[in-house]
Image 1 (cartoon, helix red, strand yellow):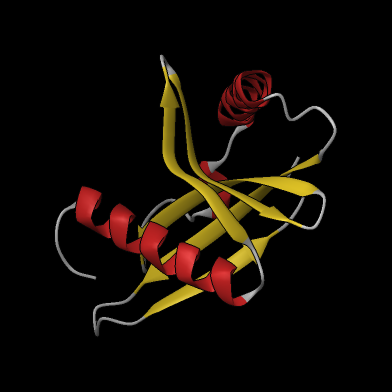
Image 2 (spheres, rainbow, N blue to C red; image 1 turned 90 degrees about the horizontal axis):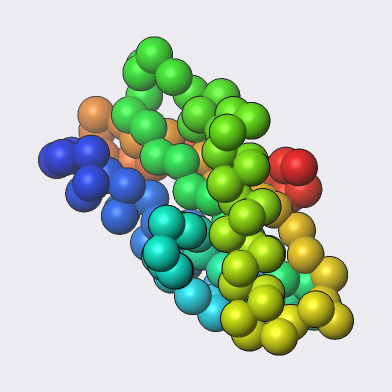
Length: 119
């Protein structure tokens, strides 16, 4: 996963989508945008809509993927999820905010840690 930050991020999102599918998730949206709102991955499993924030970082970086989700990012995720749910009339489902933390290494491999219910 060498290359630009954008390429690294896209590779992390692809890895996360593949992993989610193996875990029984249905991928509803990737890189959903509406105005200023943005959600990396929206997935469903059973009766829960999962709003997944993907943070991909190179190994040894200053900021870990886990600490990159701060209070401001959480507020933005909540607003975006509300907009998505309203647009798709999905009020009957449970919702959950998850984090996919992807760390890439110089030899090309990557490690994904998935944390449910980050909020």
